[in-house]
Image (cartoon, protein in one colour):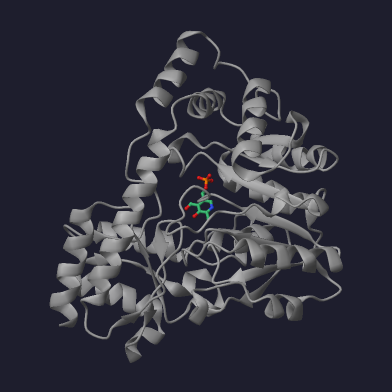
Length: 389
Ligand SMILES: Cc1ncc(COP(=O)(O)O)c(C=O)c1O
């Protein structure tokens, strides 16, 4: 290394992302079967593209919007929150963000002082851990109950609370386990937050993708939790809008200006063209969401069937939501999940993500993504059958 400035300790502490590492390695393998990326495979629906094009042609996209986002978009978001999440919101409680990710980062920044602890039910989405670390907070992991389909362990969460605990941050449906936490469990979690005066930050990116009668529940809809919850949402998954980088959060009116102070230095405002696309998404036909959900459900069923057809390599809980699952590797060599995934990539040409990327209880697992085509799942599992068979 030269004698240039060193990186901050805050950033240097963050390890390389196993997800990006696997993506990089996968590119080196010819004709790889790809089960490692959590991004929708479908294109953005045409009426949403058309909304953006119309806004561009109308000369609406060349400037910034207000920091909180376009008023008409925030209005439409309030309608959606009332209809689908049971959250009674007004536009002054909404911040439009650069995907859910920037909203979550801004929320963590606004709540966490250096040394504050944030409890993360684990396994958890690796980006949440990094968001806490970048805010100089301390991530504290509370294991979920794997035998119960990675359900929340309320006792483990209680046991993780210290005087420094400031917030609980979770995603439901979960990346990586695919678990939609039940309403009853989330009500219990709310009770814990109230009892200990904690904030709750939610990542509800997969809110529309639940299966088999499991209903998505927003903890922000509980009246007693008002002022305590920052609920983060995105257009990325619901409308296959990954690249548009557009999401939003709901929080108490008094907290929004504080979160906005964290949002401005990173974003100023969310991309305006994407805000118009988001408006078209909310106002337009919603059939695409049901179609995506049905596709993911059927891909989940296919993946579970193909897993059942393998010899004793994996043990899994059938996911109730998202488009991800998190089987345990039964083979001895699976205890180092990163090594296992690299071997599977090199020798079977199947790309997966090592469980170690998702917190301490992730080791010994791998994450499989079923937001792919039937052909991709069959290709991957035909190869694994030959490899393990
Ligand atoms: C749980 C979760 N939250 C957020 C995101 C990304 O959301 P966005 O594109 O809205 O920033 C992902 C993407 O994989 C995710 O899995």
